[in-house]
Image (cartoon, rainbow, N blue to C red; front, side):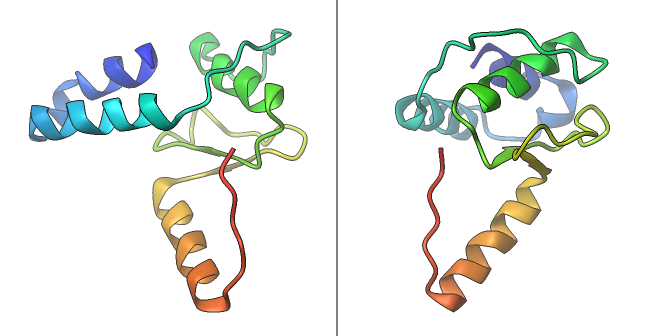
Length: 104
């Protein structure tokens, strides 16, 4: 959550309504399952990004969703790296096919 808060405080997001950002972060925090990784990974050159890989591994996540694919260049085990736009496309496909989708 600290990483999300730091990212949304960056200048490039200053055009966003702070109340909407706060609501989004509150929603993420309320709906998220907090995990404690059991090991350390060194997949990304940016050490702080490795925490996301570690959390994904702890819950065997299908996806890491990021707007920064240059820091997340490698999938890990069964965890794929996708953008928010790609996630929305997955939701569209599921809606049209009637398939089921579970976020972890």
